[in-house]
Length: 146
Length: 194
Image (cartoon, rainbow over all chains, first blue to last red; front, top):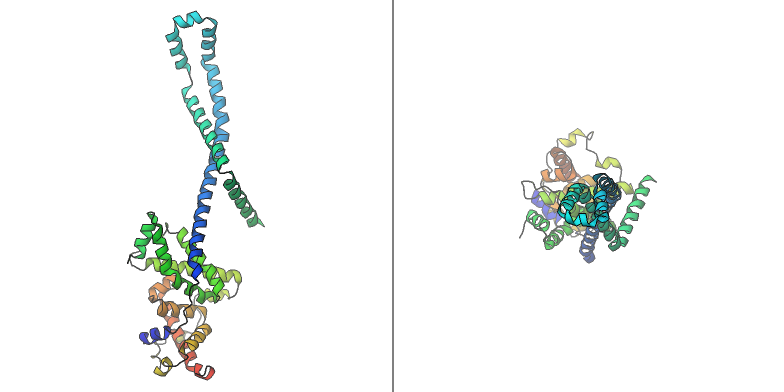
């Protein structure tokens, strides 16, 4: 019986696939791939932007206050005021300055400054793409609430 | 010939060609399957495109199952859901079409499989016309069960997975669909003279 029906169904009209459909699918997948890539880029950019906006001023303030409290300025002032003494005790002076340096804060500040420059660089190079994607997402977000 | 699963693995490893082979392999079956739902070529074009993009998006999430037809079932499930979403948005069919067949005639549930088709029906010159006409008169669910079983050669278990219905429901739908189809085809000569 099943064979009868299978035979019968061979008569069923088969719809031919339009020639352009395969290319359209490949094109749609490529577009989707690009969109996903742009979204990832936008997400990374926003994350880096938020990080650098928060971290750079904070780490900057920390470095400045640490330097003020560490006595480095005093050492430097003393070195310039009495250059002869500085040369005589140069090694001690340098060691004292190095010891007083807030290394952790300086590294963190440099890192956040680096991120800040990288974010700016990213924005300048992908400005068009990022803005397009950002406005497209904002539009979609607004449409959801309409 | 590579299996579907092998092609998926190859694509995920970076072989773009594997995806093209997969799309080629399923383009016609999916297109025809979607067309049976929407009955319009342009809409079938759009939906087929969406189906493959959705499949591509979820390829990483696709978990291989033990039997060889896992990918086939999975992509047909995507096609079914996409076509139904489209129809729901268009509201061209009542929501009850998608519900289980609870509350239907219990006598029909217990009917034995219908007898083989009469040879004269198979020999009819305008069989394709009659068959297409009869299929169109069947409800969407019955149509899809028959189409998947006889055209795409899915087992009842696979059809149950694709359509998201219990196995026994699919079996009884199949029985009822065959009965109705047979009746429609038997009545057809009066309406469609050869």
